Image (cartoon, rainbow, N blue to C red):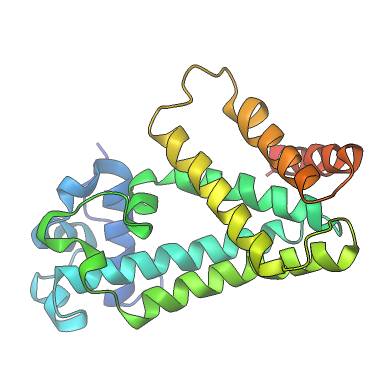
Amino acid sequence: MAGAQEQQEPAAGQTVRERLIRSTVTLLAESGPEQLKVRTITDAAGVSTIAVYHHFGGLKELLQNVVAQGYSELAAVLTAAAQADPDPGVQLYAMALSTRSMAQSNAHLYDMMFGLSTRGTYRYVESPVQNTARGFAVAYAVLADACERLLQSGRVSVTDSNQIAAELWSAVHGFVTLEMAGHFDHFADPVSMVLRPMAVNHFVGMGDERARAESSADRAMLWWSQQ
C-alpha cells in the first residue's frame, strides 16, 4: 500500500539533492508538516540521513530550497496562464485561477511559501536564502509583466502597473488563504461567487468596462476548465 513514508522510485537522472526536495514536497502534500523530519524525508528519498547535511547543511536549509522549488512551480503555472489568451485581462484572471489550483494541490507547501504556518524550530522565514527571494521575484515578475500589458492595452485608467500587480496579488492571495482556511465553505462555489465577481469589480474599479471585464473572466474560466 502506498503511503507518505514509502520510499519513492527516483526519476531518471534525478540527483540526490532533487530527490530530497521532491520527497519533502510529497510528504508535505500527503502528511503535512508533522512529517518533516530528517529521517522521514531521507527514508522517502531512499538516501541516508547524512545526505541532508551534505547537500543542504540541515533541515532548515532543505526547507528553504523546498520553498524556492514552490516558487519555481508557481512561476511555471503563471507563465502557462499568460499563454491562455492574447487578452491581458484573460491572462490575469487565468493566473488567479492557476494560483488557486496550485495552492489547493499542496496547501502545506503554499503555507510554507508565504510563511502562513509555523514549522517549529525549522520555520524557514527566520533565515531566508537568496534563491527563495529570487524565486518569489521570478514568479511575481510574470504577474507584473501581464499587468504592464493590461496597462498598455488602454483598458484601465490606472497608470502604474506595479500598483496593479500589488493589488491583484494581494486580492488573489487573500482569497486563496481564506478559502483554504475554510472561511468560504458556506459558498456553494467560491470561485464563481467570490473570486470571479471580485476580479470583475476590481477591473471595473480600475476603469475597465464591465462588459469587457465580464468577457475576460468568462474566457479565463473556460480556459481553466479545460486544464
